[in-house]
Amino acid sequence: MSTEQVAQSNLFKPIRLNKNVELSHRIAIPPLTRARATKDHVPTDLMAKYYDDRTKTPGSLIVAEGTFVCPEAVGWGHAPGIWSDRQVKAWKQINDKVHANKSFISCQLWNLGRQADPVLLKEVGIAYKSASDVYIDEETEKKAKEIGNPLTPLTKEEIKNYVENVYPNAAQNAIEGAGFDFVEIHGAHGYIFDQFFQETSNKRTDEYGPQSIENRSRFFFEVLDSIVARLGGDGSKVAVRISPWAFFGGMEGNTRGIEKTKQEFGYIVEQLEQRRQKYGLAYLSIVEPRVSGVLSIEKDKVIGDNEWIFDLFKGVVLRSGTYYSFDKQFTALLKDVNNNDRTLIGIGRPAISNPDIVERLRNGWDAVYYDRDTFYVQRDDGYNTYGFHGQEAPKFSEEQKLYAGVPLA
Ligand SMILES: Cc1cc2nc3c(=O)[nH]c(=O)nc-3n(C[C@H](O)[C@H](O)[C@H](O)COP(=O)(O)O)c2cc1C
Image: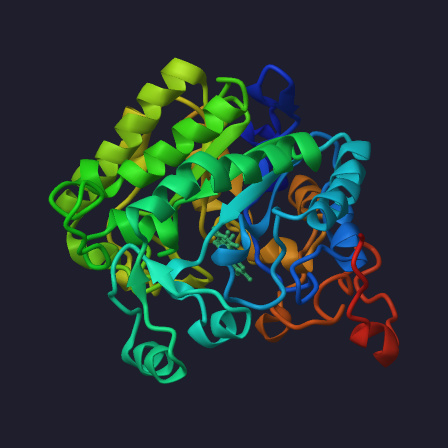
């Protein structure tokens, strides 16, 4: 594939997300959890440099890593939050840098549910919750019961609190307090809303329960509507992520069957389209069947596709999953970005090791391969130690690589 083909594709054409945001190109960095916040979930100076570096091309969109909506949503170390004043002030500093680059940033609103570590939760006195009491695996069940923090279903009172207070507060903190351009509700990868969506993890007997996808998605849509209401009835700063095909987090993935997946997630996408027409939505982020969470799927195991989503949803769709190929054969990327003028292409893992992935694509420059061992470590190694084109191997001392950052607030 030649550099000219990439340059002449839709990829480097502008695209509008709402009345204030026009992107200068169609590459977005999807959310990448990196564990460089403090133990109490405050963003650090390491993160400020990371987000600054990855938005240097004006008019870029980056979706920040999964960000906990409240103290009860946690259960995984060193990811950031957006509920406290300190967290909001820290994010504001990061977002000011992104805006100084004339770029844009989303906050992915995250709640782990049954994917939390029940032991970590116990340490901070938080109950282990999901749609139902269906554990992600036997090992976690054993651990949770031994420590005295068994998995229990969210009560209707707790659901109501999430709908009326927790999520709208987090969204307001993100947009009005921290200056994010968008919030993206994390409905993907087997986290709380996916735990409600899917029959395998939702055994409730009330109106949020398994009888129908209408019931199973009720919590999610109540949260979406409530966030939009809190933001003044305008949904154009609100986005959503779903992953119909992913196995991540103990989900059924493509074993549910293609037709059932299309039918169930089709209902969700149709409802999103109705809401887009009613109050606007910034974009719908979808995960391609070529990946499941943080891992690629072997080629012969990929089942299903996401083309049908474009028939149902008429807004901008952000697609992620192995679009960047290090051999520069951008076949899927060019096909999908040219096929439909409402397409954003997410490039995740390669953006970890190439802060300037947009310019590398534009200019046909080689990209550096990422190192999975440094994805989640609490030090700068593998985070800000990758260079821009022409300075691939900046010199970092061992001491610099070990630097774990300081909170921004
Ligand atoms: C280290 C790492 C962290 C991730 N964290 C998140 C996350 O916080 N939220 C989310 O929705 N997806 C997350 N993902 C999935 C990515 O957003 C993306 O969908 C996936 O990496 C596929 O894109 P790629 O093939 O371009 O890497 C993560 C992936 C990786 C590799």
